Length: 251
Image (cartoon, rainbow, N blue to C red; front, top):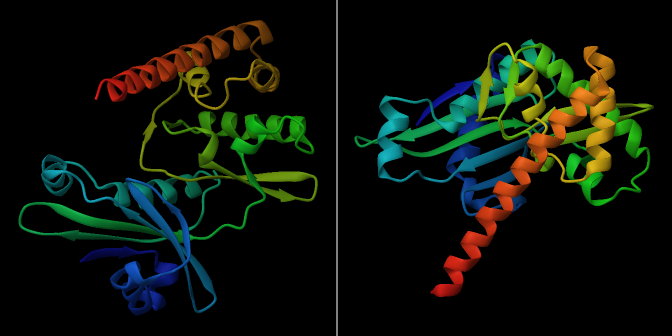
């Protein structure tokens, strides 16, 4: 099992290895999906967030061993890069990869658990959430700062931003980091990066208003393009959903 550990947590190397070896025995499950499982475990005074990635199919096992970095490695490296650019994300601790002669088998990413108040999803599902407008505007500023740093978060979606209330301010932490690009974002790329966040026009208007103020671009231009990409994403999403339902209905 190969591992890379944040120097700050090198003293926990033996304990971290035990956590990975005994991952199946950890009882505190944060989320369990068809692809990945996230569990919580405390080691000394550090609460760990351990993400276990599903064993990839045979072709990807080979690709992740010889051609492309694993999701665990990308998560760890991208987290360090975000922190270097002062963009919030849970502190990276380590990643582990188990490879055999064929390719990558299981892999794990460990970061420090963040105790958060809400995710962006609550802003979508509960328009009456306390301080809704202010949180949304601060989130928009966070996204603008990310764009200014040349970061395109491909999974910028409702569940992937943790929000922590800090007096009158809010802190934002990106999670599920393995899909990112880094380049100088033009206007279209910036607007498209909002497309997966919400189908609600009133939220898009608020984000457009704040982004326009920050960027110096007119509200009309920002809103037109942000809503264009939002509608485009929603159409594709629902088309794919209908297709899946039709296919399942025929079986």
